[in-house]
Image 1: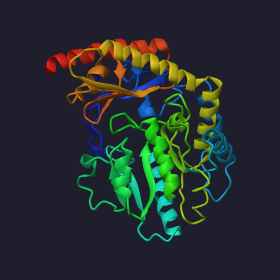
Image 2: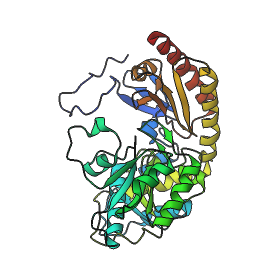
Image 3: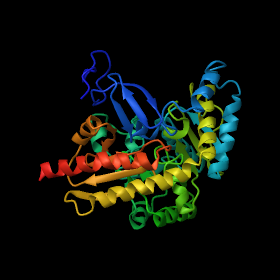
Image 4: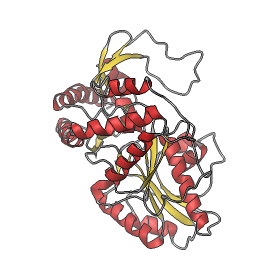
Length: 400
């Protein structure tokens, strides 16, 4: 265990349960801490470092941008905003984009879009359908949309206007919204990240799309964690052959540079007018260059196919290695977004894995989450399995 970093700092707010590790530098899917210990990165900054660390093409591009202009406000045109927006429109089949800086901001903007959509239809108190175990952020509105009472505790009163339903149950959705003229949107993650790597079923997604069309609701799909090629398609809902009306993005879009976007289709693209919404840092030249270069490199290097094939290999290794092991509830996910659910809480495995040179996280108390860079090789996937499988088996044997 690293001894260089204290568990707590006297000067930063005590908002994170940090491990006693501080990173110095990285290369590809490896990170080195300030003591020189090397780690295989199966966390990717929580699905952020799409291109890994110190990428040979991304870094010079960002250095070039830094030497020109980092920030100009949105009073002026930013050429790479239009370039990145056009690319996201092409990849999504949607029509318009608003840029901001974080997934929380993108989700907050989506909520505002839905409410304005409702008010434009004459609905005084618009309501949005959200899901059990969902996570959309920690602002008061996105926290209210989130389905986790633990992180909501102490921040009431929460924002009203949300109707909560279970995942993958179309009848429950119908029942919860029957005879409710105030519903304006359904808002969900294609694969819940913080909630435990819980995928929406493809048939369910198609049923929700159909219901939204019938009821004139917005279908708002939070692709902040599962989007940007992580599952082997640009956006995870594309596996169901559907299009969203509103799609928040962030995390992997800029390979580590703070960036987010709200992509909208025809039903929602013209809802915001000048003065309705804005941001200081959103769409700045540095972030836009990061987004443009990230997508260019992903396309050039075939990283969607890599995420699909290497992810399938890693999942197969985990399934084979944990078959018949007592205490394993389920292995789920797609591409390079994988979760292993244990029957018991397992947060201790985060530190044990780090001690063994592997970076993972545990979410929803008992789900080991892996969201590595999309450049991960099959050999590195095997290395993840070789380190992680014995750790899980040892941990479970201790608990029995």
